[in-house]
Length: 117
Image (tube, rainbow, N blue to C red; front, side, top):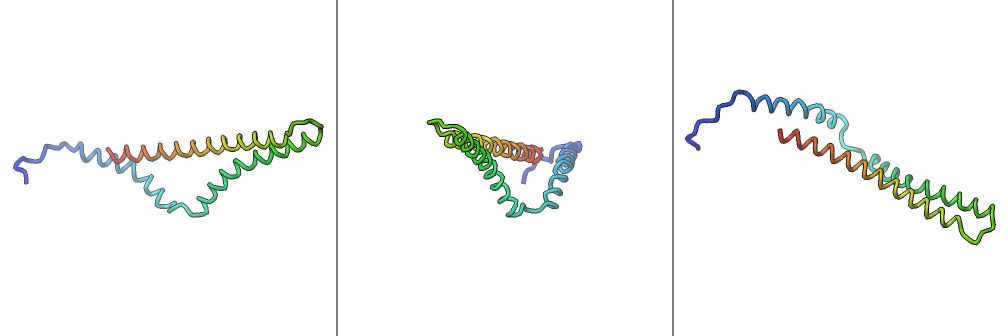
């Protein structure tokens, strides 16, 4: 035990604690009401990413097949537009995942700032 008296506190620590609780409480209550995310929600996210790749790929292939059927060229529009659709789909999925990751990081940082106060 220390022989020093406790530091004088003019209520600043209590006010800081009260502000931290006031900021954290609504988020924690909302999280408690929502409960853990269901397994189907996680599968839905995988499905969303899959569709964001599959739809442009299939549309590119269909457009390419239509162009190949309309004209006799030595180039395969089907293959070229299939690859283009796949590229667009992958970039779309990457953008969506990046946006979600940034939102999760912002939320995590906000929680850490509240905990530090």
